[in-house]
Structures are given as structure tokens and as C-alpha cells.
Length: 326
Image: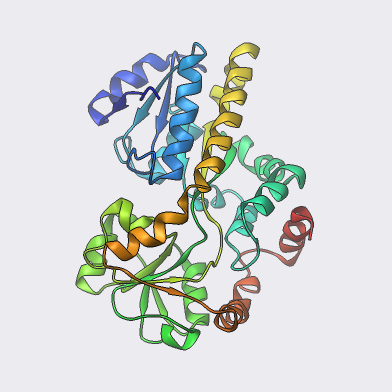
């Protein structure tokens, strides 16, 4: 497989200078993870997308994580048409409309098949874009970055909800803090760049993530426990500049649409290869707890406040329920 060039920040100004109009001669793709085709589902999506474009006459370049700015800066660049494609967190478009937070509801989806059914057949991707495209941002894919999220921490095994007591967990936002509190733990918002320092200094004791994360980001020196709680699918999104997308010729837009489909399929195929991750964690010195059904049911019941937090309206939750077809 041909690897695309991965550019650093020093070339960003030159890349922007090429943009010129609504459609750029070069498609810039901002990565959100290391360029690891074995360990990063997000990179699998980005690389498959870039490769398809390059193979079909549209020049595409990958930019290292952080080279073009943080998530908020990338969002602004996409919305202004300065950046074509960004691999981004769900919450970045939650600032426009909170409907996308349905994808983070604990113990709501059984797996990626249900997510895909809700997004495509159930029409939730179109509903999300009804709010985001007027702001210059199009969500084109939900990307799995690994098996369903579990509980990592530096201190102790977590075999039950009771074991969460005394842990202070890194949170993405206030809604995740509410989930931790429902489990009897505490939460503190920490940016991803600050997570290693927070874990080593005790500012945070752990985080929720899929099993591959400490392996990919080098956290196994201080993360020592993982509970495979299968809380929710581990997801990121791909966003495009709506101005750029609408400014494409019909032929180029069809190529981009085909690249999106190819990248999404590559991402789903990659997920099927991830069963070996638990063994890799254990080999790296991380003790793995597999929850039994009673403990899983306890976590599911304790997560109920997340459905009543006000982050999503009852009508929005009902829409997600209908969309997944259960």
C-alpha cells in the first residue's frame, strides 16, 4: 500500500496558499492519531481516503496530529474552507447541535452494526448534517477507533461499580463527569495532550477509551489496569469543509463520495482485526479484567443518569432508539 506524504506544520502555510478558491488543488487531511495502520482505526480511515483520492486523480496529503492546530482550530479552519478534511472528536460538532451525543450514550448500541444502521438507514447522519452544514461543516463518517470503550486506571482492578470509588477519571466534558459520579467516582476535564502528565502526577487516575489507546500513545508505563466494560462504541468522526465540498465539480464530488465509502469500509474491516489487543495489553504489563454479566448489568443500571442529564432531550433519545431499529 502506497503511503501518502505526512506533512508537518512548516508546510501548512504553503498548503493554504494553494487553496485559492472554494476548491483546493490539494486535499489536506488533518490526522488525529499517529499514522499507525495496525493500531489506529482513525488513521486507517484517513489513509484509505487519501489513497483513493490520489489513485483517482485528486492530490491528497496527510498532516500529522497537531501540525495544523488543536481540535477547535481545525474545526474553525474546516468551517471557513481553509482545511478540507479533519479527523475529529464527536463533541466538536456537538457545539453546533447536541444530537450527535446519542453516539456516546452508555450501553445504548450493541456494536458498529447498530451504529451504521442508525446513521445511514435510520437517517441520523442526515439529521446531524441538517444542523452542521449551514455552519460550513459536513459530517461524512463515524469511525470506529477500536473495540468498545473500557475503564483504564493507574491504581487498582475495577471488578464492579463499587471499585470506582476513590478514582478520579479524566473527562471529555461535564456529561462524562456526571457519568463518573453516577458510578461513584470523580471526574476532571483534561485535554488529551495533558493526559500523560495528569496520570503521572495524580491529577487523574484513568480514562475511558478502547483497549488500544495506551498502546498507541505510550501510556503503559503508568496505566496498569483495564476493565473491559464495553460501555459504548469507541468513535471519532470525519468532517469536511462544506464550502469546499459544494465547490467541487460533479466528477470530483463523486470521487470524494467514493473515497468516503472506501475509507469507511476499510475502517470497519480493520475493526475485525482487533481481537489481539487484549493480549498486547497484558504483554505490556496492563492487567485486564473481563466483567461478568452481573457486573456489566450493574454498570448499565448505574449509567441511567446519563440518559436523564439533559445533554439530549427525550425526543432526541427516542429518535436514536427508532433509528437503530430496536
